[in-house]
Amino acid sequence: MGKNLRQQRRGKGTAVYKSPSHRYLGEIKYEETTGGTVVDIVDAPGRNAPVAVIDSNGKHIMNIAHEGMQLGQNIGESAAASGNILELGKIPEGSKIYNIELHSGDGGRLCRSSGAFATLIAHEKGKSVLLLSSREKKILSDNCRATIGSVASSGRTEKPFRTAGQHSMAMRALGKYYPHVKGVAKNAVDHPFGGSTRPGKQKSVSRDMPPGKKVGSISPKRTGKKKK
Figure (cartoon, rainbow, N blue to C red):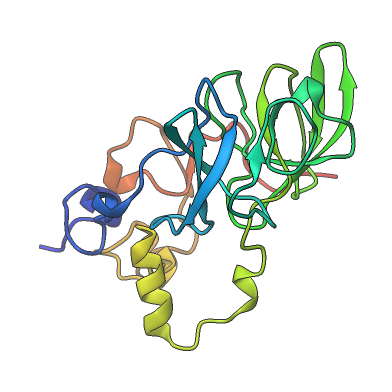
């Protein structure tokens, strides 16, 4: 009879697919007031960077910690110093920034993993041009907020996993599916790409296909190798 595909097993609550969200600190995003004093730097399960707890007039708010952050540090909204949260239009060109809003007020979307940052390279007519680590450029509104600096724990990936079990438990803490097995290595009953029928099988599928067959290039605009 076979069994459900991985796409169909999502949300069933089994150990492989269940994310330990009961241990998460909550959503990390910008509040209306973001200035204050750093009172604690805590480990955040489900994240690969520490989180700073900021006391803002008696209210505790959380933000992703930057490289070199320390207890007692003042977080402001005026000076262009590491850790301060400013609108892109107020940040000098050439600055490193992280936790960047794509749209004003969305709380931060870009460059949130350990060691990540983008470089603000230009201001032009109410827009700011950012250079991401992937060398992609983003043009965002000057009203979007960002934190100056780079995310803490930049050396996290330099220490290798000693055993497969360590890697497995680390991925489980993040709620990630691991190990990831490619479809062509599976049996035909486990994946549309599996079995000996894979060679020559069409990789593009319709957007209206059921979850079990919606793998590969889903409703692509074009197929084939792109000509230079």
